Length: 581
Ligand code: SF4
Image 1 (cartoon, rainbow, N blue to C red):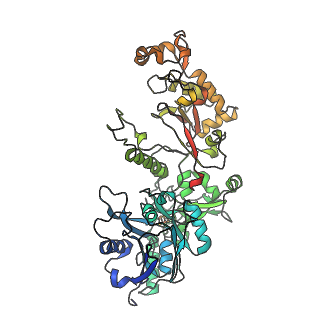
Image 2 (tube, helix red, strand yellow; image 1 turned 180 degrees about the vertical axis):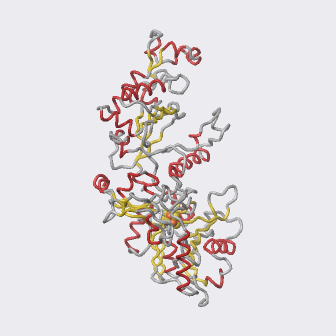
């Protein structure tokens, strides 16, 4: 072993069925299989019999890292996690997920190149690795807890030098796409349920060793500096997002948003990121600010600093400090993350990298609809043309810029609660009004856009004939207002209720126009009774009661609004998500 650098030297094996732990020599067994993925595949090949299913105890989960992890070499902070993958169909396949963070380096410093987990514990457990001391700990009190709470509890034991990778309720309940996540922030998908099947809630690692470098130290450092000088601040385009004096090109979609005049406003002493020349290694961490990249310029004032995984110069995490949130919601005032967070601002309904969380959640819902509900075209989905929003339509409310109370507060939840609302819509109609600057001006445009008789807004069915109250009936259209339009309403004293009442009174279609629609010609009794005998010029509202209009503030600058006609008889359903944290 002594002649090899990089490797920690040992692979740790843990059999959860028997509680036995042992090690074998990395170089002896795995030196031909360079990197964490190579070790993982070799273990599966050697130890998992053909025909094994992902949740069988004999399946292995291998957390493995490569020889460069923990050496300071740039971009080598990832942990490869290999197993028989639960989402592969019809046959399980071997696959690898990756997570960043500090886990890889800590594992090496504890003396291991990989941890191979087999078997199934007879009760929930977590694995504690502190250098050579490896213990299987009881996790019964953690079972049922989310990743954040689990991590907090184990971090108390591991100390600040430790790192914790945990699963949440999805993994425990064998949701195939569930994740394992370390430091509450770096995840690898598809592994969570395999850990759950083994009753393994988490792994905590703390290491006090180091990694031996075989070559000359000075040459090594020179190489690292050279490598760093070549790397950009983002993994999309190695160019800044705004014009810089030294740069021929710039690319607005780049995460390299640091530039002159942009300051980490919440740092102990506000720090201007400056122009960040590519070869200036001392300023390399000033380049990326994912909070500003995803949420716009407002994020700069809350930025404490950039952050990221071990040895990664991209630093795609942003640490932000928002004291008002802490005061209001009773959560820590400083937090950090990378791409997480739902987009509530510019282009929040898509498309693009800024919508990663929105699209990922929407896609997950779509998979559930297909795999559980059978929503395949021509099977349970008999749509004619279909719609892009069926693939993903997820948005967060722009609470910060709304003049009103948040949507979930209107629904009776506490302000500090996190909630999810599900509602059914048939489409999205853009309402562009770039000229109005009064509530009445916006409402004129809105009412004349939403009163088309073919857009799904109309009362095709009478709730009374179905023995339902209007509230039970649902049929709730959604009006998405951008912050600037909402603020125009707010400044003039308009509330969501007065907007709803206005729309109820003015977004009406003459009965004679409805009567010309073939549906009502063929089914005149489907019109609500109170309108059946009305003269033909009577305006009939497009909803049964003003509260049916769901008014939500989303989006970025400019006054492009959006109207989503109701997707049938479904009322919006809002639930608290707090217990899943
Ligand atoms: S800091 Fe960001 S880019 Fe770098 S390894 Fe971590 S997640 Fe990836």
